[in-house]
Amino acid sequence: MKSFLLLLLATVSVCAQLPDTCRQVIIGVAPGWNSSHVTLSFYEKSGNSWQLKAQPWKGRLGKKGLAWGLGAHTTPAGAKLRKREGDRRAPAGIFAIGGAFGYAAQIQKSPRLFYKQITTNDLWVEDVNSPSYNRHILLDHQPKTKWEKKQQMRQGDHAHSLKLFIAHNAPPQVVPGAGSAIFFHIWRGGGSKATFGCTTMSESALKRMISQIEPSKAPHYVLLPKAEYDAYRTAWKLP
Image (cartoon, rainbow, N blue to C red; front, side, top):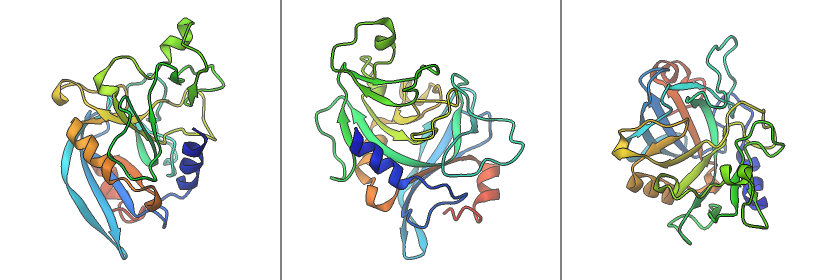
């Protein structure tokens, strides 16, 4: 887990735009702030220009749409919609992409992408009162308490059998209550169901996307409503 956090911290930027080191970006554009639907695109930088690496595909977001998250961007002053725990909104902004987690022993990926096979001892803490909020914990024993069982990453849910971390409100500056456990993962009901705040897609699309992620290219995820994407595209150096 330490290697995952070091990798994540190395890619996080405090700039209000994509960092110069970023050479891979996943773009998510939603119709509006209250939409749970998103169109995703994968770009890679060649020289000074962005090249579309894969044809756009569909995904789902939080049931109530989007709200500004905490990432590598600057949230506009006076923004009313800000991501909060349990608000069923996906975080909008620019976010580093962290490690992958899944039920399988191995997945198709870059050798440099962190991957952890999820066991019953793996927790991701969503308790806002815990000092480990929005962090991964590996227990040295089988979960015993109600609290430990509630935080388990492995719940027998196929939708979470493969996931890629989106660095919203990520260590080392985690804000209690600002939202936790934001991932790319497999959608439910063939895309008919919205999420609690994650970005979901078909299993084949997720596997393809993860296989193309290259940590050495400082990959980031940009999620915005269409109006904001058009407004910030130039200033944030977006494709």
